[in-house]
Image (cartoon, rainbow, N blue to C red; front, side, top):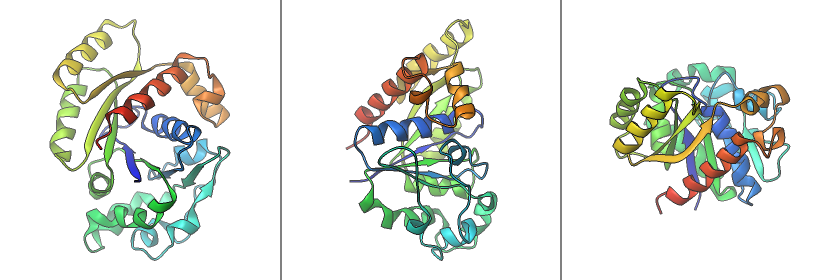
Length: 245
């Protein structure tokens, strides 16, 4: 059975793309047939995988079923890991969805014919609450939600839980953590006690993650023995263990 996992947060700059890229890589490395769909018009995942951000006909034709998604999939430098690239036209995807029938099911309909070919499909989502995000909630089995341990994280996470409801499983984790900061430690302890869906694995604020953008590859190829690589391995193991049957 194909599992669809979306890295999502209402806020930007919290480590969604880094999580999507590294977790998809780890899934593929374990032997799973894996696809990552870069839904963010900025195309960061597409850039990191050294693929041109272009969908023939743009996002409008793709979500309306006028473009065959399978024909747009690109291979990456990593075995068993494919990419459905970003396209700058995705910035208008809300309008394309709004003009379609049953808009919140359109992304799931794009993915449905691809599922027989993949064990995991990751969605790297733009930060927003919109028709795109509502479509992601419908398509995803689980939302992987990175959170920076800051004071407003509790409010943001509570809002997200209210919006998602029971549509998708929510698995949150802390990102860009600086264990030397008292505030980070306090916020993590408080939120972890309040929300059982927050995972114990946390991604540190590490230069190795920033180097991914320079070297355009996953953190395992930047510094496999570093703290960040170990944290993503721990996170992936915990995600797999916590996914609903």
